[in-house]
Image (cartoon, rainbow, N blue to C red; front, top):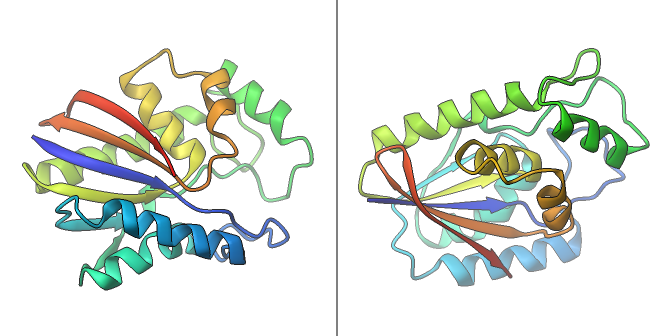
Length: 186
């Protein structure tokens, strides 16, 4: 059995609109230390992450202290909304969760996000059976992964976790099949 600890990033600086380089706030950097404390005794052997700075920085203290290389997988990135910043995120998110194919021009649908994230996850699980793994991720990306295994995870579920940063979900897998899922709020 494999255990994957999905770590949704800590609090980012929303004044920076470029997804790739958006850093954590000072509070976010402090709360990332709680991630280290939580993961310290989990016998993690591999670390994967989205290419976005906020996700990398959330697990970096843990990986540095445990001499783990952070392996970046582009397909673990967050959903692209569009080429411009949107003001009404909640309406946009509700539309996406109600219709997994809904997207703005030059953006991604949740179905597309789910497909690439789950495909990346399956590759990781097949490459590292019987290992404990940490994956640095994002709220929407993680939500679509949970929804893949549990269709009851919907817009209301997403709203429940939207402000939880950092947020950890531990999923046990047999192969690529979900065995158990546990949410951890730090």
